[in-house]
Image (cartoon, rainbow, N blue to C red; front, side, top):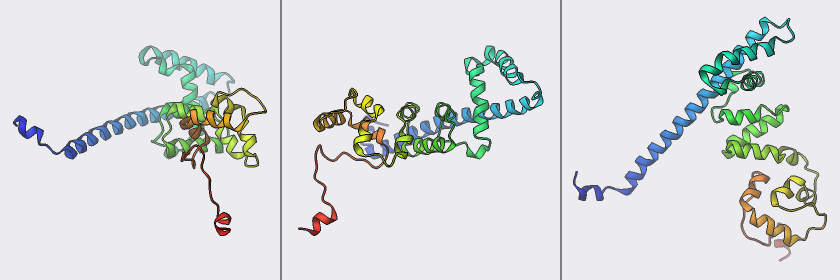
Amino acid sequence: MTKKSVETINKSFVLDIRGIIEQSRRNAVRSVDFCRVQMYWNIGRRIQVEEQKGKKRADYGSFLLKNLSKELEPEYGSGFSVRQLEMCRRFYTLYPIANAVRSQLNWTQYRGLIKIDDPEKREYYELETINNAWTSRELERQIHSQLYERLLMSSDTPQEVIKDPMVLEFLGLERNPEYYERDLETAIINHLQRFLLELGNGFAFIARQRRILLEDDLARR
């Protein structure tokens, strides 16, 4: 192929090929991540089955994980520590049905989810992570900010929500009962992208200040 013919290749064609390559790479990563999740789920299931054999011994579970880790770590590394094996067991306990394990989530995200005892709360963060394509770090931050609890407090006024210690910490403001509106506005604008993420779905930045006309306002015109 001559230099001239290379230069005349359709740019959109090249972009299409690049898109195929990038998508395939992303699919490969997701495939590997899910295989890892399935591996830990199966390990958790097998551990629980084995524990049932020694259930008459109060310390059998601890004994089993400790010795299993000793067998696995030298060959497979720190990913099979006692702590990790405990997570595998809890993972299977919380997700005993294989089909309930979602391929869109990786193991790091599941590690964050299985720390949540409340099943409804856990499911909320699980679905939000998938719907909003949260990374593991974003999921951790949302859980730490108590997004679920704040959404349940539907009786809270805007003033109460904005004084939430987690929100104030996020905005970089000290706890002070007498905030001026301009202080909050400046802090919110400075942290806009992260602030909207903390509040969840249904928010969009249109302008620093914008008058909103309601149906009653239009009727009076």
